[in-house]
Image 1 (cartoon, one colour):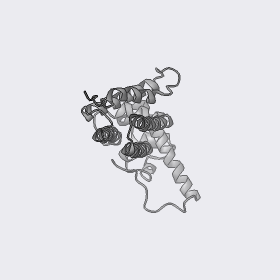
Image 2 (cartoon, one colour; image 1 turned 90 degrees about the vertical axis):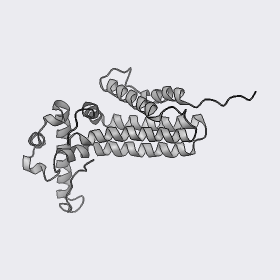
Image 3 (tube, rainbow, N blue to C red; image 1 turned 135 degrees about the vertical axis):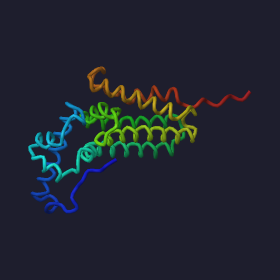
Image 4 (spheres, one colour; image 1 turned 90 degrees about the horizontal axis):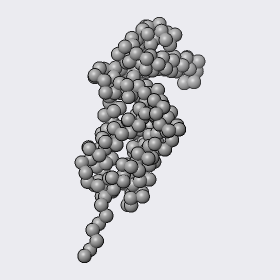
Length: 223
């Protein structure tokens, strides 16, 4: 995925006035873009509109980003990094898991981390659901790449757990994508206010439901 463009030389020392101004304007562009994307869709918003909503001239936009794809990549980057770190922790936990309870704990911790990330970035979660499955365009690519990353990571994690006999050997792609699909539908329901209360514990409940069907069969008793 494209990465946000930053200048080779910072405008002044880190923490100085020019550096602070740059960070503030970058944040203003990101916030304005996210608001407009949710209202009109990524492809329905021009760079001029983003710059104007951030209080900048169109030409000033290009001091911060090369274009919309780089801006969208900057929006996605914090969530992708948080999810990557959570998946790495889950992988490490499964690597030493020996019993079903340890597997459940590893996936429960992963679910809690994912839930915390989504609660911290609800507007980006909404944009993800809105745009990730839309027709491919350069500006949507970072969102589609996030979707592909989540799916591929879920499949890889499932295969690793199956290889160690921690999960039932059903097709990993089927089981992993079924859980990802259910999680995205629950995310949509949460954002729409359709879940009881504030949706607390939904991720943990999904993990428990999924693992009940994926735990390995107990060994057959000797005659």
